[in-house]
Amino acid sequence: MTPAPRARTLTIAGLAFGAGALLAAVAVVLAVNGNATAAAAPPLPPPAPAAPVALTDQEVSSVAAAIEKAFAAVAERVNPSVVQIRTEQIVETNVRFWNPFEGTPFEDFFRPFHPPQDEDRSPRYRKREFRRRGLGSGVILRADGYIVTNEHVVRDADKLEVQLYDGRRFDAEVVGKDSRSDLALLHIEAEDLPAIALGDSDELQAGQWVLAFGSPLSEELMNTVTAGIISAVGRFQSTGEAVQEYVQTDAAINPGNSGGPLVDLQGRLVGINTMIYTRTGGYQGIGFAIPVNTVRRVAAELLEHGSVRRALLGVQYTAASPALIEALGLPRGAAQVAAVTEGSPADEAGIEAGDVITAVDGKELENALELSTIIGGHKPGDKVRITVNRSGDVKEFTVTLGAAPEEETGAEAAEGGGRRPGQDLERDLGFRYRDITPEIARRYRVEEGLRGVLITDVDPDSEAAREAGLRAGMVIVEAAGRKVENSRDLERIYRDLEPGETFLIKVVTADGSSTMVTALTKPGKD
Image 1 (tube, one colour):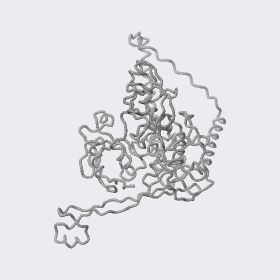
Image 2 (image 1 turned 90 degrees about the vertical axis):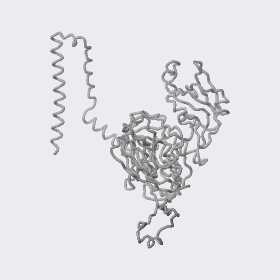
Image 3 (image 1 turned 90 degrees about the horizontal axis):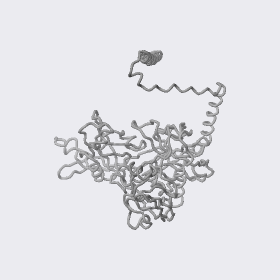
Image 4 (image 1 turned 60 degrees about the horizontal axis):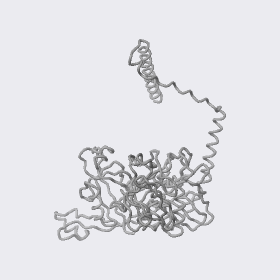
């Protein structure tokens, strides 16, 4: 069976070569015959000369061997610092009971075994508990038992167990967690643990080799190591709750890798693996890690305070338009102030709506969303210099930052502007969604006339992905027996559910070709 594909490939390549040769021959003939069209066409540049081979076979083998040794040395150094995290959550759900003999002569016979019904003979519910288990990864930050992982790994967990590289298992407690950065700090009663060395994510460059560690998909795959490169730095994403900066990598990350370390070839932590971009639910070469400099700052806050104190500027903003950037010669990341909170530090300093923020502490913004991460990286009471362009005039303000309330960020993108109605639903169930606007319908190729809510992203570690089988590109058309035509419908239905209640949702593929019914459970109260 092997030769057939090879022959097919060679044939196709031959056809492509032959067609190219034929076209070249025709072009030569036309040029020789003085064809006007051929003569008018500009000549193509000649092929660039191939770079000379600078390495001998022996040298190539030596380089490959050196890379192998580097990977092996990093794995040997880092693996003892990597842990597996097993979670257990006790979920209380309402199970619906029906009398299967209702309306038959056996109805009364079954009634003693059936929960009581209302007078209208509607079905009743019985509470039932079950244990939901989860899997994640983490890394040892300090030798005295402090471990960092993702907040979503330990969210709502009633029991946490950490397994070390040497096989020892410990019950773990949550020292603190921060949903906005998706980081949590755990502690186990152990000493002299192999803490990982910390790198500097500000020094990362695209193309740099990195290794990812964790327990993908299964407990048995603990301490799996994958290799890749830094695909990009400074990736910003607005989660609706905050703006977060990420490092992008193509090192394979799968469900269960969340919370595990991303390291450089010196074995230094440069990020915490947190999510992937996927249309299949699995690895597709696009993964994201929280930069280690964010990890260092958040972990220090969690250790000292149990939560993260964030600074407040007091503005809402949008990215400056390309036309405005060109007209005023602004940096590409300029952020236009849409609103200033009355009495806020920005207001007291003199910043006004319409101002365009171009730099903070002398550093120009490379991305408008960067403003939120810069302010969020400061502490209340810090002084920052904000450079603005006001109708062509450049002004600089010194702002003493305030303290942001727990559920607010220091500077809000105007589209997010605070807590969104569906934020609890997204956090609880693990997927993001959008209304089907004409633009969204074109982008995701949604069947014309299909009404519902489009799932745009699914956390691969969530119940939605692992148990319910939801995927990006599906459209929710019904939830808990009620029709869903837009996000308000879905959010209203979710609010009406009781904590712990399991409900059915009906989804269809974007092209309308298939339908699926699955179940989700609204988490119980803490």
